[in-house]
Amino acid sequence: MSFDYSLFIAWGNYHFAVRDFQNSRKSFLYALKQYEEIGKVRHHPDAAACLYKIGRVALEEGDLNDAIEIFRESIRRLRSADPMSSQLGRVRFMLCKALRTMGVENTDEISQLEKEIRDLVQALRPQQDLSAEISEALLDSLVRGIIR
Image 1 (cartoon, rainbow, N blue to C red):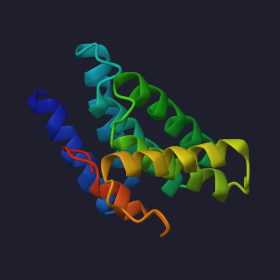
Image 2 (image 1 turned 90 degrees about the vertical axis):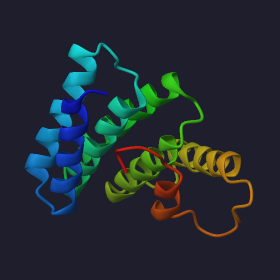
Image 3 (image 1 turned 120 degrees about the vertical axis):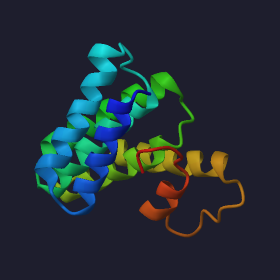
């Protein structure tokens, strides 16, 4: 990863943390562009993680349709890069959250996402008690790397 990638990812994380969503989105879009256009690596896990953070920005801003579309694209890319990527859990979690915020409940998609989240947690952390609710914090704790 070049300096530009990590610098803009760090800026995106900082702006997200201080709730400056416009600059967070810009930073992650720039980093994503570096992966896709310059690095020619659409399916790199960090490129999908940039999409995840852009989706989080859209969710925070209340743009549910955009958030849902972005989370679905992030899932597609992560699945093709690594079907057992620890990032898949948190992207699926946020997709469920966005769907529920839109008023979508008890659909086949949500049921499938919840099953995939449980299966991933079980595979990555076999000692985890799955009778308790799986939280965003638990899923974030499974992720390693620059984009948390």
